[in-house]
Image 1 (tube, protein in one colour):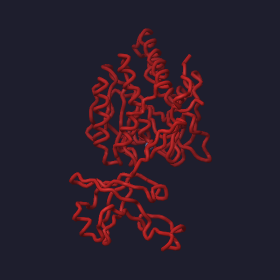
Image 2: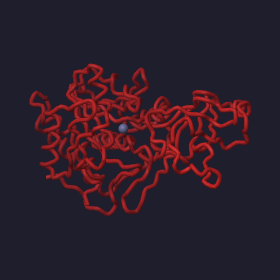
Image 3: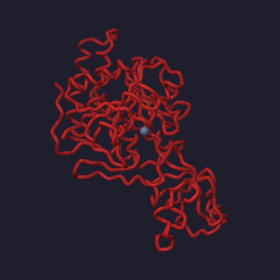
Image 4: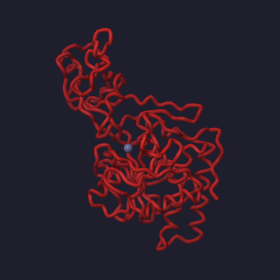
Length: 374
Ligand SMILES: [Zn+2]
């Protein structure tokens, strides 16, 4: 019943909580009361009037890792429209401080997604690919895609097994899929390498897979790449709501653009950051406690444990506000938080997530009751 208000509740409370957690914070009691009011208003409004347009818009912008400039420009323009002063990092990520105070907490989500890149134009005119990130080939087989050429053309195609028809290939079902026996079929009359190259397609062109975005009456949103555009959406709502209430916080929003290849979170933060909260997909699996309706708090992933004290605060926050959550170990996983630590950033890092299961996540149902913090 609580759906993803749990996730939003934890995230949106952070600017408020940051002041409480830090006795050295100069925030006055009045400021803290204002933050609490903001938290309440955010949660109340989100519960009754979910606005998905920015999520929908972001998902509609193809952004495989390494090809995120259009999505980052959208984020930049959106934050500007809310009255904030975002900036691009040298690597093209977007960061935005929520006011004039030096930020000590950075909240990060990544805008880059899985995808592919053309690695070969084959003799029959089809395309060989290399993965961007680690898409499961069995999940992406038969998926439609767009091919972005260097000179700005966009073609469409489909990821297929070689000789894919079961009517012509007895082993179509049992063949182990790998990059050597799959190809992109272009939706153009091309049957030779030269014909494909004449279209302007070449090695290095970007392959972006269809998202199949759907908002359903049940409250579900199904789409590829909710990892991690759902996380970006939460950051959008923090920015929008604080601006709407004329509030500020010593918080930085950080939209990284190379998470899927491991270095998005390594650098680019404001120099005053002490803590990093990473929002990314929560892992669901047979050995995990998490469900689609609980906020997932990661205790450890493939890179090691997250900060004990930071995590404990998140757990206490969720308990205090009766926000459903589960703690979990993500065995085969790392995050922008891992990248920051591995790069030597001296942050205390925590990781929470919106549980995503191929390719679906639960979001607010329009009919559910508002969450009312005590
Ligand atoms: Zn992710």
